[in-house]
Image (cartoon, rainbow, N blue to C red; front, side, top):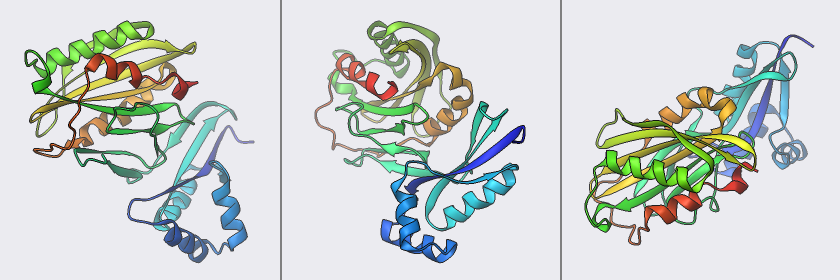
Length: 266
């Protein structure tokens, strides 16, 4: 086995704009697969479809799957199992929109949508395999006794989260986000979930009459390499102007308590 080996992994996630029937047809046409092989491919969880020594070789196959309407990844490791990394093509993202149309965000194509991370979330997604997650919670400004600034709200969210999580501490105080169409601040905190060291990025974005809080988290050991991905995700966030679909915003303390699902990182 070479010192650096790469694997092409088929995620089974369709690109936005492709339906399952179309994706199956394109797998047959572009890869010459019969129904039995397609069924086997789709029936397995993240199967490895090719081993290769060069990232470029794997990326060609990823792009071929992309052209057929499916997401795939190149996963590389040094010394067979250590220092693993995931290489994703820049285009391999999907746009998620809240059911009420209030906001949207671009996430990695290999992520899946959840409905059990937080019952109050308007958007929630992530990867169980990579232990990285996103929860988006809205809060109407008018629901507060006195309207806080976005920076004050971010301070409060970080403090409440740290108080509710095990072995938690704020590791980065709120700093201003460079975003268009709103005011944003972000901070970070460290904690443990089921004995696993976890790091959170908490971003608060003020848009019109509400403040959206984006909770992103992953294991501490990989946070530095996930940080750039999280930053891009936050930059891609967009709220619909004047949206009034979300009628029952809850208090931030109760909302953030549910956001950090221990089951998600178990």
